[in-house]
Amino acid sequence: MTEIFSTIVDWINATQVPDQLRDVDAKGLFTNPFFLLPFIGLVGHMIWRQAVRDLILMVLFIGLWMFTGSQMVQGIFVEGEIQIDKILPVLGVGVGAIAVIVYLFFIRSD
Image (cartoon, rainbow, N blue to C red; front, side):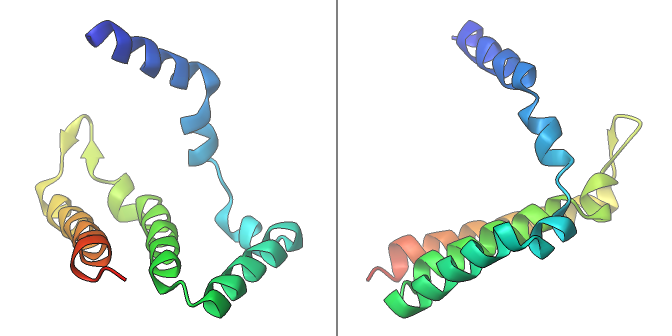
């Protein structure tokens, strides 16, 4: 079973997708009209369709993506050791995100 996971991890590392995601220029992305116009169209369509759950999930995903690139998350490991003073806020954000997802899918079902 571990052979399957190791081959999948090796394949993902060979495609360099983690490096590409790490090197995304968020400011450049959200000022690029070729991304921004379809994105605004998608948000407008979600508002018109009243898909509040999908809109909240998209905002949550973008917020978590921006949070993982922050200095707090990047400074969590120093010389291979976890910094205890920075782990609680990261865990709090993760638990909050999971709580929002559980609320949207299980408690507040449309």
